[in-house]
Picture 1 (cartoon, helix red, strand yellow):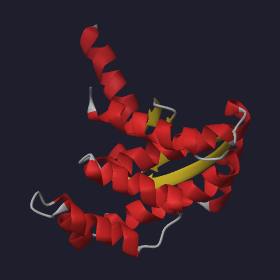
Picture 2 (cartoon, one colour):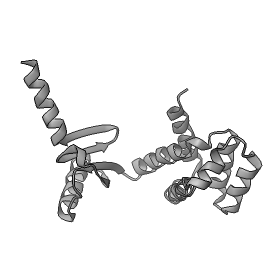
Picture 3 (cartoon, helix red, strand yellow):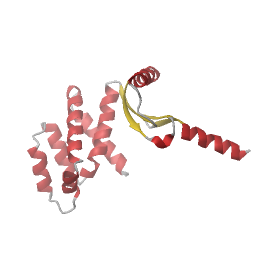
Picture 4 (cartoon, one colour):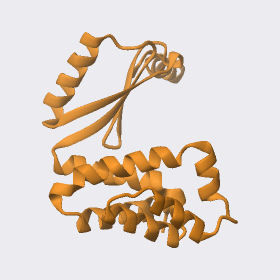
Length: 174
């Protein structure tokens, strides 16, 4: 079974055992834990093969998390799947957002988007999907212009670099 599938299963299990009203708060807590665990020294400590499980468990217990999250993290570490925590968190977030009729999208542009453009893009995506879209923006000057939108595993590539590449392929084909 691929690591992605394992992460999905852990996220689904956590989702199913968490009461619906507690899912959103748990999702935020799990994201915060993953953010803290991604700090280089903590990440090195957690992922080092010689770090004893007991030491990892002490770290989780010291965080004084909610009982379900504490139990879940201890289980993940006991099974040696702590390297998947970030992916599990992302999958859990997707499940919670789907339940709340929300969706995450990433937009990549050559220059930062101005507030009006960002608002208009968000409104258009909300209208097209019928869901509340939360945009994460990134800047990549290599795309030349336009934008690339990633949402629900789909990519809309409206970048200048992509358009030029497509034009080049058409010209070379003739």
